[in-house]
Length: 293
Image (cartoon, rainbow, N blue to C red):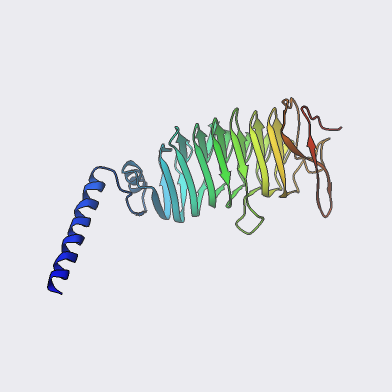
C-alpha cells in the first residue's frame, strides 16, 4: 500500500513537470482566461490564449489584430472610443469566433471598411453574440475580402454603410449563413445602406444563404441584398421579409443579378416569388442562368 502511494506521487510529479515544460515551450493549450480591460485582452491574445472570456464593458482604443485561432466567450460589450473597427482578422491562421453574449458596438469608421470586423485572408465565425450599431464606408457590421465568414447564430443588426449596411462580401470571399430561425439565430436585420445592399452587398463573392433571416433592411436600392457577379445558393430555411425597397426581381428587395457569372455545374436556388405567407423557391441547373424580368 505504501509503495503504491509513492508510485502515484511520482507519477503525479512527472505529469506536473511535463505539463510545465510544455507550457513553457508553447506546446500545451493554455486554459481560458477572464479579461475585464483592453490591456488584459491584448495580453491574452499576445500569449495566444485560444479562449478568452469577456466580462463587462471594455472600451477599445485600437483595432484588435487577430492572426491566430481565438474564441471569445462570456458576457459583455466591446465599444470603440475612436475611429477604428473592433477587430482585424487577418492571415492564414487568423480565425475569430464569437461564442458568447458579447456585443460589438459603436464603431464610427466612416472612411474605411468593416465597422465591426474586417476579415482579410482569414475566417470569422459567429455562433452567438451581436454586431450592433456600427458604421463604415463599406460593410457597416462586417467586411470580408479573400476570406470566409460563417454565421450559425447571433445577429448583425442596425449597422450603417454606403454599401452593405450589414455585410460587404468582397472579391473571392465567401459567406455562409447556417442557422434555424430561433431567438438567437443567424439574423441580418435592420441594417441601412445609403446606396445598395441594406443587408448584404456582394461583389464576386460566394454566398450560401441556407437558414436564418434577412429582414427589415433598407437601402436606396436592393434593401435585402445586392448580389453582383457572385455565386449564390438559397436554402428553404432562409426567411426574407420586410426589406425595402423592392426591385424588379422580387418583392422583398432581395436580389440584383447584374453581371452574373457563368455557373457551370452549379445548383442555384433562385427566388421566384414571395407570397404573404412565405417564400417560394425553384431549383435551376444550367451553365448560364439569367433572372426573368
